[in-house]
Length: 266
Image (cartoon, rainbow, N blue to C red; front, side):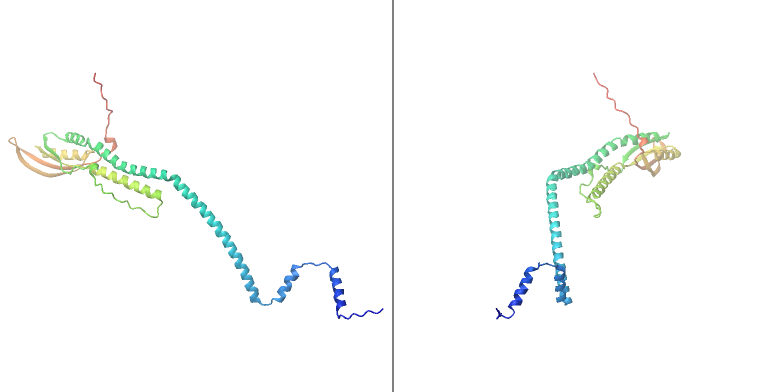
């Protein structure tokens, strides 16, 4: 029997379908990409695709990095707020303590001024008495300088200039040194006393020895003769002199202290 295929190509399709159904499909990326690169020959298009891919990666990296930074900053802010609330009472107490300490500098200077100057005239009278030579006597000893005390200083607050580049601890230390130096200067100025000595002598050489003895005293300095005249005293001619001098801070070894003993009265 003879069969005639009236559909052209139908036999080829069937054979091709049979051949295809009999084989296994395999995915090969290298060949697929090679086929794409062969089809895409425009270098500008390739550059645009690469730039787009790089931009996407960069944006993703920046997003992840900034998200991590924001999370870290939020944690630090939360910790800082917590620490500030926790130590606010300590900081307030520290500020009050510093204010109290600053006021104590002034009070200590006042106490030192009163304590150091209460025996000043006792020392001066003792030194003048020891330096007084024979045939010489005194008629007057007066203070010529204005009485000064740390307790009577100007109360106007003066701001201490500090270097802005220094740390807060260094600035506080600088302010403390300035306050202490100011208190010490006030104490030193309160202990500076100028006085005048007026007396009579029958020997001009005795007056010279008297001035040298006063200058050698650790409590007296700058002894100057301001006047020397011949006057009549009890019918005799004597030399009346006037000396100007001022006190000085003696060295520590010149100050002698003894324990105070109070006897009980029964």
